[in-house]
Length: 115
Length: 113
Image (cartoon, rainbow over the protein chains, first blue to last red):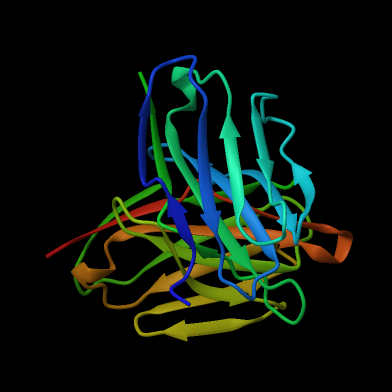
């Protein structure tokens, strides 16, 4: 297993378009997290899953954002009707729920630029 | 609401010097994490601290946790240029059913040769 994988690594889109990011976690990890990071800031929590169940979604998150993890393996994060303020790095991380320390293993991120 | 504050947010220091980064959090938490991020890269786990008084060391970095004070420190001993990076602390509270991990804003460390 090579770790958490995210794609695309970079996405440039025009305002109003929809974008989707994919995350493949470490195979034995049942927890999957999405974060957003802007320049000079820490990762901002968006949502997380245990297996296929979405356990929490940030109340700061617009309804334009939706995430799925249909079979408890990979996850997708979709942003509809993108705005310039959505430009950020979107980070995915995974961890082991039971018997683990909760330590997150991050992917390389997907950078979104909205023109 | 769980909040995490780090200070300083930016630190420039000379090689060979010692310094400490502080991480305060707002409510009782179960676990505290330290991560490192190099420019343009993702986050790399450094330490996980699970109990009051926990201390972990790796090379020139040492992390400690005081749950009563809601404080963790990351101490750098005899800094070297390779330690230049942004360091984040983060916490969660699984004992109260809150597994989301909240991060601080980070401390950007610049070590001058």
